[in-house]
Image (cartoon, rainbow, N blue to C red; front, top):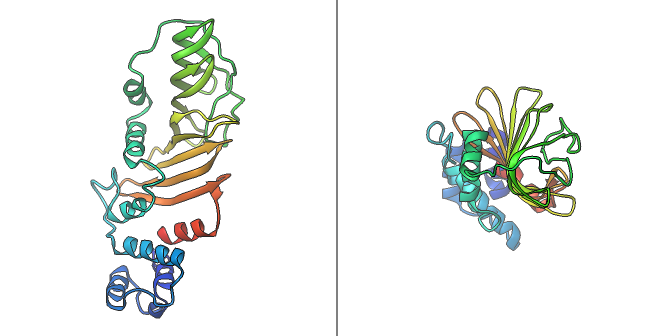
Length: 268
């Protein structure tokens, strides 16, 4: 936790401590000594205070194994949103993204049909990146299952020009869910796992960008029209720590409402 964020927590949990605690250790000691802020009475703010306190009391631990799992403090953050998502499901997707596209495909879709020449209803894709529009893809059906000439069931497609690959489930020529990857111009690699959103359907998926230096940016939640709409969690994966950068309710990619903004700002 940075000093700035620690001061933010002090201000909300107990204004009597502002200017007294300059480290997390001092802040926790003061919190244990002085207790709750007596001026916070409104139930919603009281609940927020309790969340902040539980997070502040949890330890920040670096290095293995916390480059692969959440340390106590980040786990405390997540614990307040258990009603919005399944942590185990998210971590399974993150671990597959870490393993790479081929490993993720082998795990999710071990059996791909052998039919060729199937058609797609649309030639678009869903890539959470500003580098390419979703209608720029020119997919070629490699192999899979078909029905009445359309991709139907598990299939594999590729766009040679963009070096994009997708294996997943199709329904009458339409992508439903799967594993997607493509390289980005800045040297990062994009990999996505989960449902396939459309204009009329919000889908829950994981999108991960992996840098050559090992840094990983994971975003998991409800996506629509290229942005998070609904619940979302933003994770920065360093080589020695997984950090919950933001978590809560989103609308068009931004936090929806003051309450969620307050939660996220103080949880960092």
